[in-house]
Length: 548
Image (cartoon, rainbow, N blue to C red):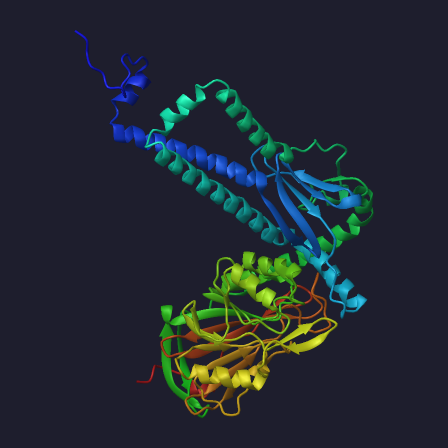
């Protein structure tokens, strides 16, 4: 007697795998097919995103175009000078092509010396920290790959859904019947093949021949770099001097970091100190411990000295910091090419939240770059970061090398100071951060902000205690971290002290506790001041216990 068989069930399943498949519930088979289809679409989408990725960016002072290849290496095209080739860290056969183009034309108001100086600094910073210079373009390329993959995936899924809707849920059967028609299958295979070739062929590159290694780079991060063309002889001529400078700089900061690790220790986790009365005199004794104490590392006027980024992180590590505060002037000229300065600091400080009050050398471009790397930019509203309620704002002026200083907005420094002082009285804050100390001077201190800190003048001022109607205020100006003197270079070993201040706060009593100054000296030694409270207790007034 014949047995009725469902049209969805094979009459005589053969292999165990086939029998297992048809033994599954219909819903399970549909879920597996849908999952496999989505996986295939995802793989094809990522491949399409990779094949079509292209980014216009800056590397050092140059414009650059980065796109993906299937050459299994990283090639940097330098025009008539030749190319630089290095092994790709990506899985074979993935590679990257970087075409370096011209240096963008500078503002016509800049003199030639200023333009050349800015470009030279960009080249030197690129040599000191190539990883930071590549980080921004690398992230942009990844975003381009993922965004194009997401678009391809979305359109593919919508296409599949539309096909199922149009065929009443019988898309596979409809496609199978369509492919059985004469000429349809070869046409489909041809279209698929041509589409694949259109994606793959532009990625192919001929193998590089004649690449030479530069002997002077043997003990540097560039040891495996191959050079093609006229660039090779040029590098051979200048590599010894460049490597010597690079080695000297790296050795300088390695010795400074070792000194920081050997000398700097966290402050005691329990402290007894005196609050300040409104008239600036010593008030009652209180204690703070544990989570009530917040430690901040304060650096300012970095001016693209990216070699210091790691040392500041070492100070934060050794001090047990909760956050890093950047007092502004992160860059020198606020250009888009200086993005790698922001990236270098962000990479070194990735373990800490960073608060920044942009200075007169930071442009709106700089502010956008800082926000992109996740920094908390003070812009007239109080932020809570690392346990501190912090208020501040961007400097009201902008300084361009060779051009002078101009207003960023229709607000003077005294007006900004008064506005911030008024805002501080509307809600309790722990700290005010501004770049310019002249924007922390108000005719009458209210004391609503218990501490104001700043930079800008490249020398340490204070701390000074200013009486106020609602409480005394501590004002402190940090010396330059990027380099102490205004005429000091921002590259290589230092010619003057770089200063970083460690600040501690009591969030329970909303009061600053004490500070220490860390100085990195021109001989790579490190000076650390004793832990200093903001009042100076006489020996006879030492606190024996906490007053009730």
